Image 1 (cartoon, helix red, strand yellow):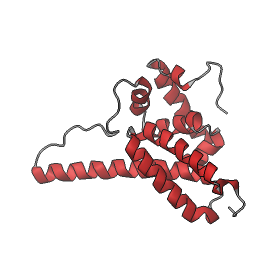
Image 2 (tube, helix red, strand yellow):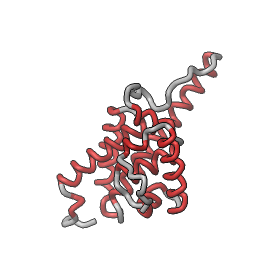
Image 3 (cartoon, helix red, strand yellow):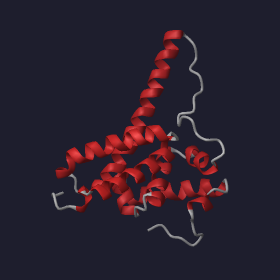
Image 4 (tube, one colour):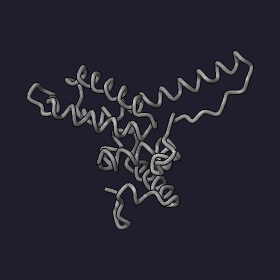
Length: 172
Protein backbone atom coordinates (compact mmCIF):
# COMPACT_ATOMS: atom_id res chain seq x y z
CA UNK A 1 0.00 0.00 0.00
CA UNK A 2 1.09 3.53 -0.65
CA UNK A 3 0.07 6.87 0.81
CA UNK A 4 -2.20 7.38 -2.25
CA UNK A 5 -3.97 4.05 -1.68
CA UNK A 6 -7.73 4.51 -1.11
CA UNK A 7 -7.63 1.93 1.70
CA UNK A 8 -5.82 4.51 3.81
CA UNK A 9 -8.71 6.96 3.70
CA UNK A 10 -10.86 7.72 6.72
CA UNK A 11 -13.93 6.64 4.76
CA UNK A 12 -12.49 3.24 3.93
CA UNK A 13 -11.38 2.68 7.53
CA UNK A 14 -14.80 3.73 8.90
CA UNK A 15 -16.57 1.43 6.47
CA UNK A 16 -14.15 -1.41 7.26
CA UNK A 17 -14.74 -0.89 10.99
CA UNK A 18 -18.52 -1.16 10.56
CA UNK A 19 -18.19 -4.26 8.35
CA UNK A 20 -15.82 -5.94 10.83
CA UNK A 21 -18.02 -5.18 13.85
CA UNK A 22 -21.01 -6.69 12.04
CA UNK A 23 -19.22 -9.87 11.02
CA UNK A 24 -17.42 -10.35 14.32
CA UNK A 25 -20.54 -9.78 16.42
CA UNK A 26 -22.30 -12.50 14.42
CA UNK A 27 -19.24 -14.74 14.80
CA UNK A 28 -18.79 -14.34 18.56
CA UNK A 29 -22.22 -13.15 19.69
CA UNK A 30 -21.00 -10.11 21.61
CA UNK A 31 -21.16 -6.54 20.32
CA UNK A 32 -18.57 -5.12 22.75
CA UNK A 33 -16.06 -7.85 21.93
CA UNK A 34 -16.69 -7.22 18.23
CA UNK A 35 -16.00 -3.50 18.64
CA UNK A 36 -12.79 -4.17 20.59
CA UNK A 37 -11.52 -6.74 18.09
CA UNK A 38 -12.37 -4.48 15.13
CA UNK A 39 -10.42 -1.61 16.71
CA UNK A 40 -7.44 -3.85 17.44
CA UNK A 41 -7.59 -5.22 13.90
CA UNK A 42 -7.57 -1.78 12.28
CA UNK A 43 -4.71 -0.60 14.50
CA UNK A 44 -2.62 -3.61 13.46
CA UNK A 45 -3.70 -3.15 9.84
CA UNK A 46 -2.50 0.45 9.94
CA UNK A 47 0.85 -0.58 11.42
CA UNK A 48 1.36 -3.32 8.80
CA UNK A 49 -0.18 -1.45 5.84
CA UNK A 50 3.06 -1.37 3.84
CA UNK A 51 3.39 -5.17 3.83
CA UNK A 52 -0.23 -6.14 3.11
CA UNK A 53 -1.27 -7.14 -0.40
CA UNK A 54 -4.98 -7.47 0.46
CA UNK A 55 -5.77 -5.45 3.59
CA UNK A 56 -9.47 -6.32 3.62
CA UNK A 57 -8.91 -10.09 3.55
CA UNK A 58 -6.10 -9.74 6.10
CA UNK A 59 -8.40 -7.78 8.43
CA UNK A 60 -11.14 -10.43 8.40
CA UNK A 61 -8.67 -13.26 8.92
CA UNK A 62 -6.93 -11.40 11.75
CA UNK A 63 -10.25 -10.57 13.43
CA UNK A 64 -11.61 -14.14 13.22
CA UNK A 65 -8.31 -15.54 14.49
CA UNK A 66 -8.33 -13.07 17.40
CA UNK A 67 -11.82 -14.17 18.42
CA UNK A 68 -10.94 -17.87 18.09
CA UNK A 69 -7.87 -17.30 20.27
CA UNK A 70 -10.07 -15.67 22.90
CA UNK A 71 -12.42 -18.69 22.78
CA UNK A 72 -9.47 -21.04 23.36
CA UNK A 73 -8.10 -18.85 26.15
CA UNK A 74 -11.46 -18.74 27.94
CA UNK A 75 -11.83 -22.51 27.61
CA UNK A 76 -8.35 -23.03 29.09
CA UNK A 77 -9.17 -20.64 31.94
CA UNK A 78 -12.37 -22.54 32.71
CA UNK A 79 -10.49 -25.86 32.75
CA UNK A 80 -7.83 -24.45 35.05
CA UNK A 81 -10.43 -23.03 37.44
CA UNK A 82 -12.23 -26.35 37.46
CA UNK A 83 -9.01 -28.21 38.30
CA UNK A 84 -8.24 -25.72 41.05
CA UNK A 85 -11.67 -25.99 42.61
CA UNK A 86 -11.96 -29.72 41.81
CA UNK A 87 -15.34 -29.06 40.27
CA UNK A 88 -16.46 -29.82 36.79
CA UNK A 89 -16.57 -26.71 34.61
CA UNK A 90 -19.98 -25.16 34.17
CA UNK A 91 -21.44 -25.41 30.73
CA UNK A 92 -20.95 -21.94 29.33
CA UNK A 93 -22.08 -20.75 25.95
CA UNK A 94 -18.81 -20.21 24.12
CA UNK A 95 -20.37 -17.47 22.07
CA UNK A 96 -21.27 -15.34 25.10
CA UNK A 97 -24.54 -13.53 25.59
CA UNK A 98 -26.43 -14.31 22.38
CA UNK A 99 -29.82 -12.62 22.18
CA UNK A 100 -32.29 -15.49 22.29
CA UNK A 101 -34.84 -13.87 20.01
CA UNK A 102 -32.52 -13.61 17.01
CA UNK A 103 -32.99 -16.88 15.14
CA UNK A 104 -30.30 -16.19 12.57
CA UNK A 105 -27.72 -15.46 15.26
CA UNK A 106 -28.59 -18.75 16.96
CA UNK A 107 -28.49 -20.57 13.64
CA UNK A 108 -25.07 -19.15 12.81
CA UNK A 109 -23.85 -19.92 16.32
CA UNK A 110 -24.87 -23.55 15.87
CA UNK A 111 -22.65 -23.92 12.81
CA UNK A 112 -19.09 -25.20 13.22
CA UNK A 113 -16.54 -22.35 13.22
CA UNK A 114 -15.25 -22.96 9.68
CA UNK A 115 -18.77 -23.11 8.20
CA UNK A 116 -19.82 -19.97 10.09
CA UNK A 117 -16.64 -18.18 8.98
CA UNK A 118 -17.23 -19.15 5.33
CA UNK A 119 -20.91 -18.09 5.42
CA UNK A 120 -20.08 -14.74 7.03
CA UNK A 121 -17.22 -13.95 4.66
CA UNK A 122 -19.16 -14.99 1.56
CA UNK A 123 -22.55 -13.46 2.36
CA UNK A 124 -21.87 -10.68 4.86
CA UNK A 125 -18.45 -9.48 3.67
CA UNK A 126 -19.44 -10.25 0.05
CA UNK A 127 -16.19 -12.09 -0.71
CA UNK A 128 -16.06 -14.47 -3.64
CA UNK A 129 -14.76 -18.01 -3.09
CA UNK A 130 -11.20 -17.02 -4.00
CA UNK A 131 -11.10 -14.22 -1.42
CA UNK A 132 -12.85 -16.39 1.18
CA UNK A 133 -10.35 -19.21 0.61
CA UNK A 134 -7.40 -16.84 0.91
CA UNK A 135 -8.82 -15.28 4.08
CA UNK A 136 -9.56 -18.66 5.68
CA UNK A 137 -6.27 -20.19 4.55
CA UNK A 138 -7.86 -23.09 2.67
CA UNK A 139 -8.75 -24.16 -0.88
CA UNK A 140 -11.73 -22.90 -2.86
CA UNK A 141 -13.11 -26.43 -2.79
CA UNK A 142 -13.00 -26.42 1.00
CA UNK A 143 -14.79 -23.06 1.04
CA UNK A 144 -17.51 -24.43 -1.25
CA UNK A 145 -17.90 -27.47 1.00
CA UNK A 146 -18.13 -25.28 4.13
CA UNK A 147 -20.68 -23.03 2.40
CA UNK A 148 -22.74 -25.97 1.18
CA UNK A 149 -22.84 -27.64 4.60
CA UNK A 150 -23.47 -24.39 6.45
CA UNK A 151 -26.29 -23.36 4.13
CA UNK A 152 -27.82 -26.84 4.29
CA UNK A 153 -27.91 -26.57 8.09
CA UNK A 154 -29.45 -23.09 7.91
CA UNK A 155 -32.02 -24.27 5.36
CA UNK A 156 -32.99 -27.23 7.58
CA UNK A 157 -33.68 -24.79 10.40
CA UNK A 158 -35.53 -22.41 8.06
CA UNK A 159 -32.95 -19.62 8.44
CA UNK A 160 -31.30 -19.48 5.02
CA UNK A 161 -33.89 -16.97 3.80
CA UNK A 162 -32.56 -14.48 6.34
CA UNK A 163 -29.25 -14.41 4.47
CA UNK A 164 -31.22 -13.23 1.39
CA UNK A 165 -30.37 -16.36 -0.54
CA UNK A 166 -31.92 -17.19 -3.87
CA UNK A 167 -32.56 -20.91 -4.34
CA UNK A 168 -30.95 -20.68 -7.77
CA UNK A 169 -27.89 -18.85 -6.51
CA UNK A 170 -24.61 -20.54 -7.29
CA UNK A 171 -21.49 -20.09 -5.25
CA UNK A 172 -19.11 -17.74 -7.11
